[in-house]
Structure formats: structure tokens, C-alpha cells
Image (cartoon, rainbow, N blue to C red; front, side, top):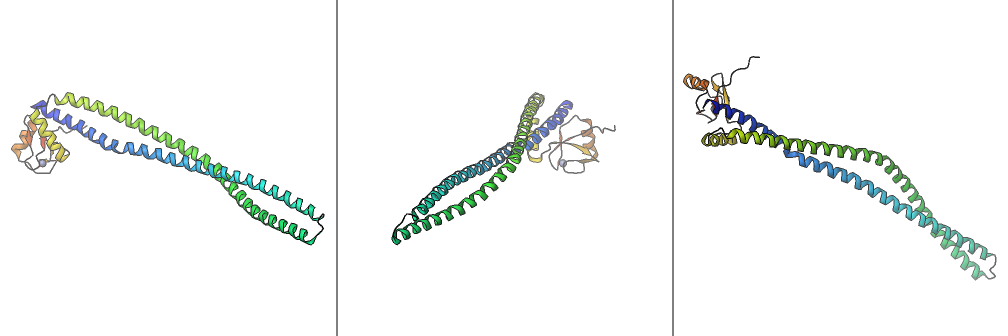
Length: 237
Ligand SMILES: [Zn+2]
């Protein structure tokens, strides 16, 4: 009996560590997932900016080509003006020139808009490229660190579970079931007495019970909370 109470104390120490591991592990996978999705968002935002920039650059090239064509047309019509012989031909040509010039004004406005936009996008990309790269590197490092932590935790958990499996071999089924039932309900199943009271519920104990607990030779439950009462030597060091 004496040893069994000590085994129960050891068992509770292991169970407590396993419980803490479970709590810590709980949020690790979500944290890793969150970092991965943040990195993906940053990457795709940068990619979208690059695509927009490319589209604008393509449109700018088209517009510049259009402007050159239009200029050619205007020049051609202006040359023809010297050759016309009737007012009707003259009016027709000047009308054409006006139409092409109006188109050119529209294209020039669009060109200006695109050039401003491209300049802005270029700036955005060059500043955010550096930041994104650094940010993504940081995210990757954090994710790796968390994964490593998670692996270490797994290893520690396995080790504790192996220790637990060995330990419970020394504890009778009846006591083990009782211990597990109290642990589940009260988080602590084995508690020391302190100042003549159960440290689980603070119920005062009578001298006879205290004496019996101090012998560490009997399975004594607190009559108030049901926890297993033990005596732990005060460490004065
Ligand atoms: Zn109690």
C-alpha cells in the first residue's frame, strides 16, 4: 500500500504533464495553418499587382502604336489638303483630320492615365517585394519553428505515455479506476494535507485521519471531495 500511494503521486505528475501538453498542442496546428495562409495571401497580392502592371504596360504599347498610326493619318490628310481642288474635298479632309485628332486626344488622355498608374504600380511592387520577401521568410521560419515544437511535443508525449504504461502496472485496477474517475472530475485526484486540511477542498480533518494519512499506508479519501489524501514530507531546503 505504501508504495502504491507513491505510484499514484508519480502517476498524477505524469498525467498533469500530459494534460499540459494536450492544452499546448491544441492550437499549434491552427497557428501553422494561419501562418501558411498569411504567406499565401501576401504572395497572391503581389502576383495580382504584377499582373495589373503587365496589363497596363501592354495597353500602353497598343495606345502608343495607335497614336503613331493616327499621327501618320493626320500627316497624310494634311499633305492631301495641298492637292485638293474643290471645297467639298477640302471639307471632307478637314473633317477626317478633326475626327482623327479627337481620337488622338482620347488616346493621349488614356496614355497619361496608364503612365501614372504604371509608375504607381512599379513603386508598389518594388517596396512591397522587399517587404513581402522578408515577411514570407519570417512566416516560413515561424511555421518551421512551430512544426519543430510540435514534433518535440509529440516525442515528449510518447515518452510520458510509455512511462505511464509502466507505472500503472504497479497500481491495482480498483485504485486506478478510482484515481482516474476523480482526476476526470476534479483535475487533481491525489492531494497532500496541509494545516490539517485537504488541499483539494480545504475541509478540516480530524487528528485520527491525519495520523493515518501521515503513515502513508492506507488509501484514504477526503470525505468531502473524494480526493485521495496523502502526506508529502516538507522540503526545507
Ligand atoms: Zn477534500
